[in-house]
Amino acid sequence: MTPKVFPIHSAQPPAPPHDGRPLADTLGRGLRDLRISVTDRCNFRCVYCMPRETFDRDFKFLPHDEILRFEEIARLARMFAGLGVKKVRITGGEPLVRRELHRLVAMLAEIPGLDLTLTTNGSLLAKQAAALARAGLKRVTVSLDSLDDATFRAINDADYPVARVLEGVEAAAAAGMAPIKINMVVKRGVNDAHVLAMAERWRGSGHIVRFIEYMDVGSTNGWRMDDVVPSAEIVRAIGARHPLEPVDPNYAGEVAERWRYRDGAGEIGVISSVTQAFCASCNRLRLSAEGSLYTCLFAEHGHDLKWLLRRGGSDEEIVNEIAAVWRARGDRYSEIRTAETAKARKIEMSYIGG
Ligand code: SAM
Figure 1 (cartoon, helix red, strand yellow):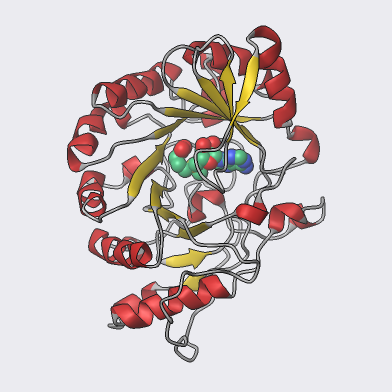
Figure 2: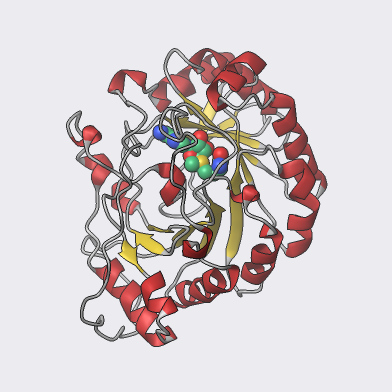
């Protein structure tokens, strides 16, 4: 079993009072996006994310009482919104394996001014889409790495068929969550031959497929630079068949680079976290299922907020702590990535939240 990297316990002096000014980290970056992981468990065993050899029967997932309750998450989310967070993405693990997730959605949907979304592998979406939409979820991102059933089953390593995910996408659209984003992680020699089919499946559908470069998150996936298919190659391949032109970002710091079909059949996105690092505009913070804050997807440690929450910390103390964590942030891992840093002992994506 791979050792888990535990958060630093914040049994330290209390953080200085937050002065109320907009937060900026040591590189001048503001805080805008929050990703909330609601579980470290998943019903898939994607070979590049939760390989079965590591995440097997003996793997120790977080005990239930260590996972933040919905009320705790909602309380923190309100504080984050007060600190300038505009967008919250619920993730995991697989968020839809967390029981009654729609209850959390309803709590978060009540926070004014928050753009709320969720990332899922789609396998349980057909069953839950209507309840999630009723609870106030307006948008969803579905991960789908291939439309070829054999390839997809080999990647998720849990025998889930493509059809199950497609039903989920349809149910979400029928529940009013369109346009839906479909995320495909592209790994050389595994599914790169399926990029064009994926683009064509969603071309003209109103949904947006986004191609993601395979990253060296965690320490269990044996990442090598040779496995990465640069986004430029993907844009070239799709553009050769269906001409594309660039589109301006929706907002500063948007992760996906947008391209639209010249014939008006919609748009695609590419997320080039490896070949064109976007650390300089990274405005994301991550809250793990057990209540630790991570200032980078490639972090080696987190900051324990649950400790403060559960020993009766006031909103003011917690806000001060969050503000101090953000102000001290200097991460820019993807800009300084080398083959050596890729071997470092980093937090697994299934734990920290994708
Ligand atoms: N279970 C949900 C899902 O499948 O979307 C949410 C969590 S999952 C960790 C979030 C996203 O991270 C998925 O789209 C997954 O494909 C992506 N991901 C996982 N490991 C990755 C890696 N090494 N490089 C790029 N993306 C990765």
